[in-house]
Amino acid sequence: MRLCFLAALILVLALPSAGRAQERRKIRISNATLSYSALPLVAAREWKLFQEQGLDVEIILMRSAAAAAALVSGDLDYQSGIGPASISATLSGVESRALWSSTSRITYWLMARPEYKSVQQLKQKKIGVSGLGGTSHVAMTVALEKSGLSAKDYVAVSVPSGNLVQSLDSGFVDAATLNPPTMFFAQRRGFVRLLDIGALVEMASGGLTAMNRTIKSRPDEVKRIIRALQLGKRAMLKSRDKTLELITSVLKMDKQTAEDTYSVVQSSFNDTGIPTREGIANIVRAIKAEGRFTNRNIAYEEVAEPRFAIEVAKELGYKVP
Image (tube, rainbow, N blue to C red; front, side, top):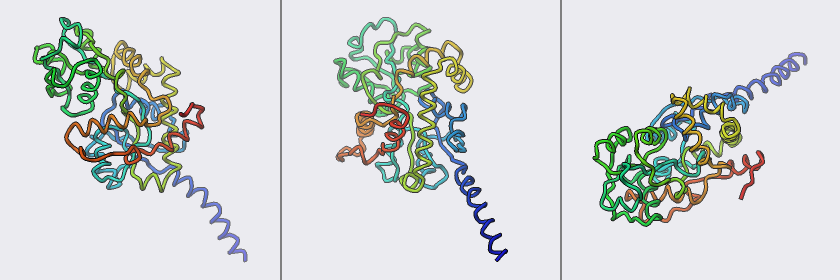
């Protein structure tokens, strides 16, 4: 009888410990690059918000294409990001969904040499983009259409992102789509902003993607990760000085560039974190512009699962549509 009692006591004492061990499992989240759209992820790590949610998170730098394969194999738990690469993977058969977005619009400017005063002057001119058919290209096309310029009116030229400013300098292109911090370097060199692309085109960027099996088997973990990310984003908006310190230390920017980046990025953040239908639709449009899935009607629900973001937003007091 006494032995049975001791065995039962050991079992009872072991259960909480096992629960804590499971709760503190190492969670691997990939990120393509530590850029402005990944700032909530960085904030959640640096400011111990993951730990406050009982999570042990490791951020792994990995290209988006490789991240999809790692999610399938189980080498990754989550992919930090929503964009053409992650949505394409889902449409190609990867059983994954977009869960949360950090920004509701991409932060890109169309910049040109100072002799150009309006987008209308770019007719028959060359515009540099970091990838034909990619996010920046499609967003630029939509923004220019809204500004009265069709895709037939100019020539889009693919230029590696690191060479865009140099291409402007040399005259190889007449204008280019640039994002932080490159847009600010170009501005200081005398190039002018002709168009704020993100202000005209809603498109999800940054965020969180996971496999359906993870969503079904670990819903509490998914929700806690989203809560940590949402709290990180909210803390960034409430504390400018603390965020500038984060940007300068982690993204390796000088103070002026960090200030410029913060002023632009804070206006692009998705308030609730819920991936919007329009934002997802524009990503799908970007994918179709590359000639993929063109004959397929793609529903929002095929690629996104917003319920966790909705629950977290409500619990944190956000107004949810």
